[in-house]
Length: 121
Image (cartoon, rainbow, N blue to C red; front, side):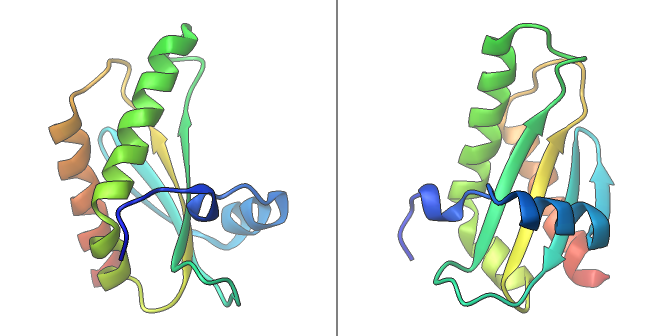
């Protein structure tokens, strides 16, 4: 498995995002909230992911973009965990809920906890 987070891994389809919010399963642990849905798909990639940061909590775009970069990096570095903890192809969205910018290690620890929690349910 390559170590990229290219265009094919990004969740962009409006139809898939609507389906995710309609039928997905919510899991939450501060500072992240995740909604995940396992789907049938003929695409080659194993998962598609989206990230979101509230404009209400971070007025400056540079702050929102920094947090989104951190979350995408966590996803990129933990592709193997995602693949091990989902039985089929999945789409998911990560949402950042904290009002302050936390470091990479905290975000990664929470991300791993969310996926461990996801497999148990």
